[in-house]
Amino acid sequence: MFIHWGLYSQLGQHEWVMNRERIPGAEYEKLAKTWKPKPHAARDWARLAKQAGMRYMVMTTKHHEGFCLFDSKLTDYCAPKRGPKRDLVAEYVDAARAEGLRVGFYYSMMDWHHPDGARCKHDEAARRRFVDYIHGQVRELCSNYGAVVGMAMQGAD
Image (cartoon, rainbow, N blue to C red; front, side, top):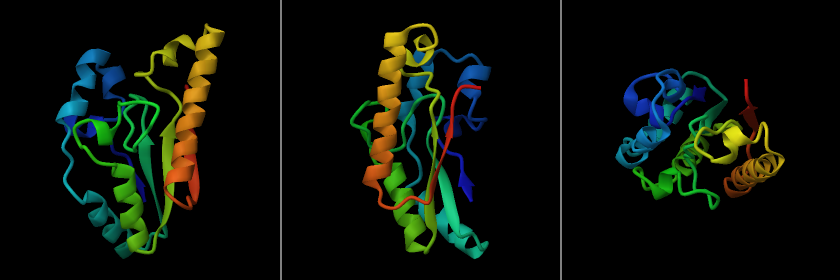
């Protein structure tokens, strides 16, 4: 089961809403303060996945808008430090494992929030900083949540 979830969920639209609706970054960032996801939603998803015969789940940990659902030491643009005030990836991991399901992550390498995200195409120093940032976050995901069955990653289209 693939769980596609993030700040865009509160707008009731698609995950590309910031880009396609041309929402300015500063305006979109305000969603991070107001997002208050239902407690224990991951438990409901994991139970449903188990009932449906799923063997693993994959959840978005960060989509293109750059908001991390996990606790990252590399940015404060993340769920534990903003509106939710909790590590949503940890909740998902715990819920999936409680149902005997294996855990996978989706992580977008594209990032509209990081200052070097757009600059890295034409600026080598920005590219290096951005690559270090991505590697650091992937390291956090692979180190802080136990065994992961897989990681889906998407780069620039």
